[in-house]
Length: 252
Image 1 (tube, rainbow, N blue to C red):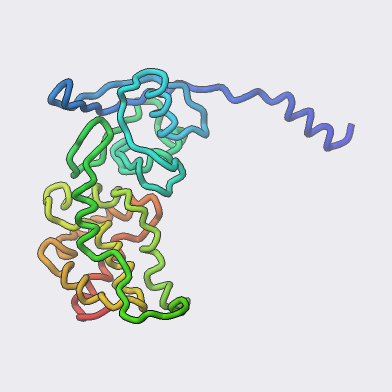
Image 2: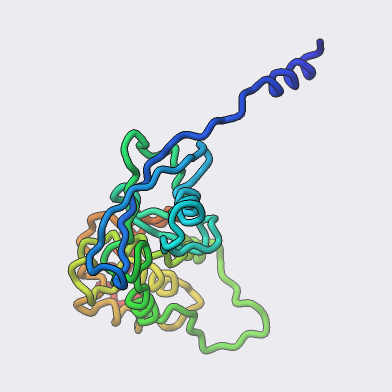
């Protein structure tokens, strides 16, 4: 028997992976049925490659169709399914069940600091209002016939903050945001950073003036919660510090 044939035979005799039981403890809320939030536990069959989003789908499709949560692309790009999983902000579509401690129920609840609407869904309007206030768009007076040229070095300055997907995981992990409804929050500052340090933009001073407000960057307490929560690996705390430095210099 050749080596190739032996390998094929070995693959044929491999046992298919068997599912394992996982308990998912969800914080439920439906203002139409009861005024308070409550915990409810479901048991689902999972595989090692399954994600928390798969568990939620299983619950909604097979056990309780009233479960409400947001999701879209399911590939960590749209940012729709940010939630608190075992006490940490994460994307449900990127969190593998096998990476969690499944010897006890996995807790899943809505992100904090934004108004709770139902189950795992929060009102994102306050988050996007803060985002819009920092002018998250390129401002340039020239009208080139071709693309605006930018050096690799100039791009590197703000490349990290272009990765934001507006999932709100960083902002809703911030203790200041939980207690201060006026604070812009890390995500808004990250997106301001993306344009403040863009060499093609001409509105950096306006954004710096906005973030120099009492509810701007100076409310940050540098706890690093935001950096740890970011599913895109953005160095959020570093970006906020760079915006603070730019304000103190009076320019980018």
